[in-house]
Image 1 (spheres, rainbow, N blue to C red):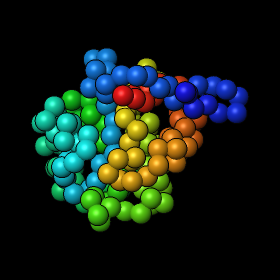
Image 2 (image 1 turned 30 degrees about the vertical axis):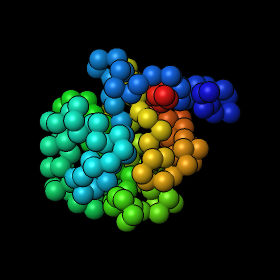
Image 3 (image 1 turned 45 degrees about the vertical axis):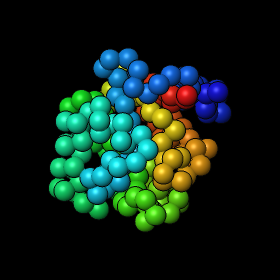
Length: 157
């Protein structure tokens, strides 16, 4: 079910697809913490599939620390890290902070890509960050309304 704005322009597309089966050249986006740890959930698969991206992510976290919050990183392997929570696990940030940083991180990502780029993601923030997808979806859709027709696909199992 696509998310749309008031004029029914498609903003988010949903596909029954494994995220890691997205077309070659697409950006694969996921939510990240600022500690350089991909230790649970889908991040474990990202770490195993894209070890070079993991190293770039860790270096970015070392360089930026808490200043990474609300930013994005596009790695050389086209992994888009959205820094939505400073902490992880039981110390993860509260949902309202994660949502605020999600809006900023998505906006930052959109400023770095062009209208022909395709972004694929899971229902990020809804796993170990504990934010209901519907809340993240609202922030994502609002950010996409101001983009230059970037196609964002959410992969569902």
